[in-house]
Image (cartoon, rainbow, N blue to C red; front, side, top):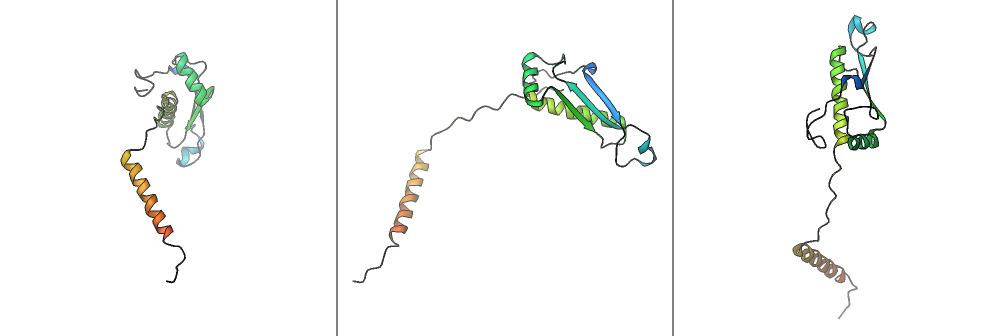
Length: 137
């Protein structure tokens, strides 16, 4: 995977850590649809992979569980489905390993916004006060 948030140096997952399973895909494919195993499922066991540090493993397991399984069957060729499944796995891992967003720091209202709020309240109060009973003089 290329560098990004949580992965400043990128990440390379050894092919031995990935388990790929192939099956027949539904959908278009012509005569070869019933004979080729073009659907790909890629499984990565997060607890056993050697690509992650302990901190990364803890964060990934917390967000994704012990293992991650991704399938791809939108392409007709097995090769393109393998690439698509690996890309999805990389995106999932990148998202799981990204650090949590910084907490929001609450700010005080500006003096101008306080003044405008109070002026609006005064105006509304005047409108409501003017709705009283009409007295004959």
